[in-house]
Length: 255
Ligand SMILES: NC(=O)c1ccc[n+]([C@@H]2O[C@H](COP(=O)([O-])OP(=O)(O)OC[C@H]3O[C@@H](n4cnc5c(N)ncnc54)[C@H](O)[C@@H]3O)[C@@H](O)[C@H]2O)c1
Image (tube, rainbow, N blue to C red; front, side, top):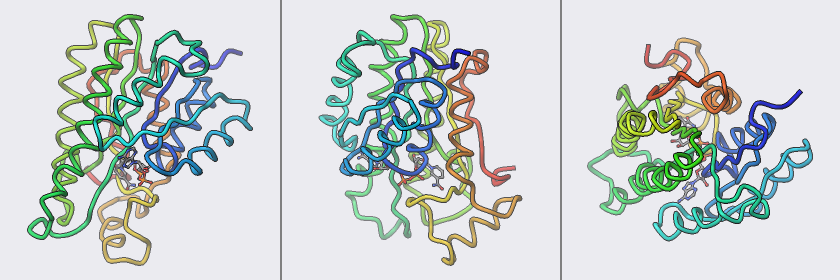
């Protein structure tokens, strides 16, 4: 039986670990050829690629720091030559997953933190979506999926104000772009995770971790695969009528 994403090229940013790695593996399992983007950890990205290949999937790693516009350009340039150029410059699925957060009181944030958060969490998805949107419009089919956050529509905790500002921005970008690309055959949606067990989230045993568990109604952090499943749905054929949605997968956090 053909897989739902066979002959599709997918790009997942920041996929050398965490949610991105799970998304890359899941999309590959569904048949997509996956570009695994990483900023600095080539070794981890290679491990993700090897994991996909050993499950008979297709993947290759591309290093590009998305905090810099030059890195965004490097990643865009890699799309043309991906998998020996067999997709002819087409890109079918873009998952804007890379993200950063610094925890701490807003009044103590250094000025450099503004660009750090906004460049990776907002500017890179915007710049990549512009290039991807053109490629997808040309082929008449595409999926852009932005990994936002439950912090993209509510602020139940302090200490992550800049991060919240970026995720609200990404949420709005998803909605706005869906209006423009929907008529061209391209859907634009978001997934908004609640607290998920990764390097980015507070460690188990910390006060922050306990506070986040309390905000869920299921009483636990989520697993990366629970987010990958939501991304796979939005990337797949069954989501053809879903556009401009920010799908919340947060254990009841924002209920
Ligand atoms: N873990 C959570 O609780 C949680 C909750 C809500 C939303 N999210 C979002 O999910 C996404 C993935 O986060 P995660 O939890 O897997 O965290 P993570 O820290 O494990 O992964 C983040 C990924 O982004 C990459 N990245 C960071 N800066 C980059 C840069 N300049 N260029 C390229 N890649 C870069 C990292 O290398 C890493 O692979 C992020 O957008 C995050 O905001 C996470």
